[in-house]
Image (tube, rainbow, N blue to C red):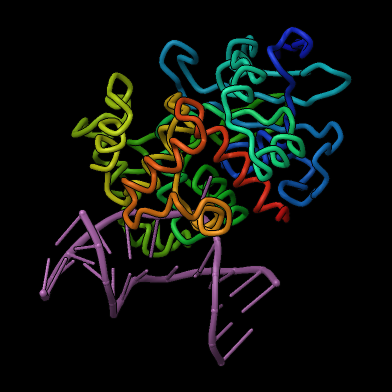
Length: 304
DNA sequence: ATCCAGGATGTAT
DNA sequence: ATACATCATGGA
């Protein structure tokens, strides 16, 4: 086992691990204390978080177990490998949060959200687990989406021993593609089961590559991801924002649509594409996805 | 019991 | 392009 620390004073802007990991961006982390999504305080102490990182090009060549907690202005980590580049990538520690906040137009709602969850950053999940997570997210609550991903890992993922414990990696495309729709329905995926199976098959067979969105302009990238079964504009936006490094997508979910109706009614243009453009402009363009994620977490956590 | 959750798909217009 | 019904599951 390797261990280390990352001093947070070196970062551009602050960092808050709990709000970053428990804000419904990523469904791939867990808390060994069993308190995931249960603590309402924004400053929730120094809990450990853990995940099995799926392979990421140029970042992780293979599955790696990773544990991290935030204590006294630093991140303490334990891992199967050197976790500094992993954490920097996964939790976007290289973002200049001050500059991002400065690029975001001030308004009462955004000011409150940025203040209450100061230090929350976007995540960069491995793309296949992210894609499956958000296919599962359709008409589903945050805690259940998280539970579904843990169940998929436990049922179908590789076992990895680390620190005398057994961890479960998220299943690979090949592993998920090998399951039948009925098997996945037995895992309580409901009507998402055929979407997950078919999308996994598309990736496993090389029919399409989610990484193909990387070189494209934003709206072309969204269209590229929409070819996967079970992926519409909203889920595509989530994958671009929470995995592929795009910061301008504003996923139009039920919470953001309510926020638009209540706070930005002029941005309601009827359809997804035009409303997305309007609210993206409202939030300052380039980092509009950051603003969206702050508002989502703020409203969903009881703010109003 | 009825409603709702980080929506997408297929079909009809 | 847009409107509509339909799709599982479980917690409030």
